[in-house]
Image 1: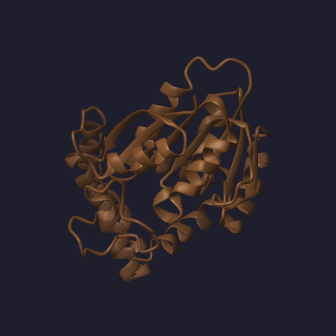
Image 2 (image 1 turned 30 degrees about the horizontal axis):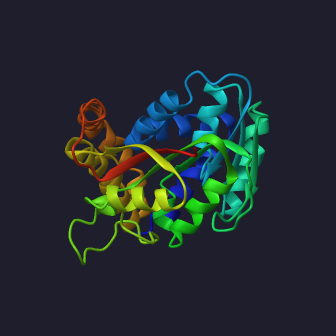
Image 3 (image 1 turned 60 degrees about the vertical axis):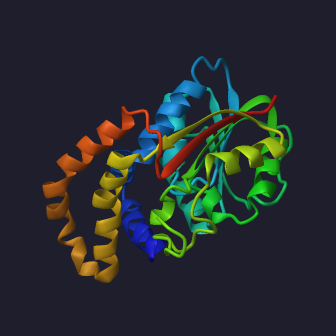
Length: 269
């Protein structure tokens, strides 16, 4: 599945004007259930933060989470990085144009030990499944964090993450280094890196997984087959979005005992 090229086509349209970029961020926040979970966790973990604090957006992508944090947590001083130079160059232009000066963007490789005792909070959303040397990255996160700092990770789980349901299935997103984590696996790896795990929670339970297929997977499969389907997408969403959003709301307000996504919070003590 050629996932990134399709994302980039949509992202390229959003680059054309500030209002389009802001609408793009809003759309990502509505259509991707993981964003609902991540924002709620950020609000919980950053509640009561006094004064300025240093935050590392580790794998910032289009910059939507840095944008949200800068808007909702004025004390945040954000260092946002990605390995994709075009993403970083684009965000470096958009954020100052949008009047946001508390975010600095850079091209960095998370497997390189670049920072020491610098950050109060590290955010990594759907990044670790792309990196084979995950324990090295966790150790780098620990070294980069101040004592008492917190880490928030969202990643596919091993319970159908990447739309893999049994051994031998092909990942929906080809560039994944792993299909997903079990709770036990990611907990053990974070503990070996020196972290204390605060909690693990499943996202994308049964209702959320069905919504993801309706909102993300099936539209992307259509567009991947032919770009002509871009014309059909508005009508597709008009017919299905109300049902999908209802499923997402149910999932978000449920205590999922399983899920295809995994949210993990940890602390350096």
